[in-house]
Image (cartoon, one colour):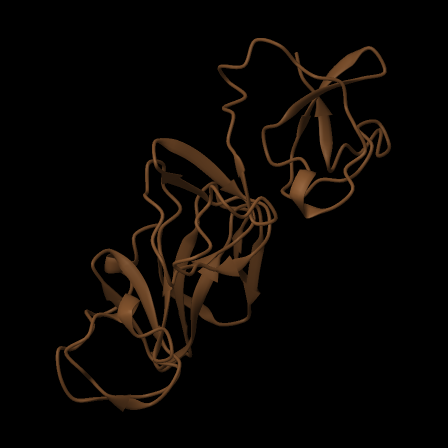
Length: 209
């Protein structure tokens, strides 16, 4: 039987296992994405602490191993003996993937995906291009990677749809636009399609009432 994690509302961490309980695959299903496998889902949760063991404080760590640490998913990218340095200080050794929850501050050496939101210097920013953060790429100075987030639920005026020219101005999930005399709401990230271009299926936009 095919097992799947289908279009979660929040980034979802998982482990798949074989019939004998051996872990075969670990990873992340992003918002509105799908992960499919013929294996059993051993564990899935929006909190990586509930899915992965704690990062050891000493000993040898092997490439590909996955742990939790300080509420984040930590993936070993190079086999090494554990050092006293934190994972965020050693990006050559670890990938860090944090839960996609509201109110999280921007940090360096974090892998971010399109649609993620991070707070920086009093402003909430939304990721418009996947990347790993670094100290000189703060959200306020790299418009190719971030845009200031405007909550569509509190925005009173809806702007007319404009054809995006790239990732930097594509529409995100929940964005509302006026098109053809109707208000439409985006159902996907990085949306560059015309609002009524997929009627009656409405896979990318749907009328907002």
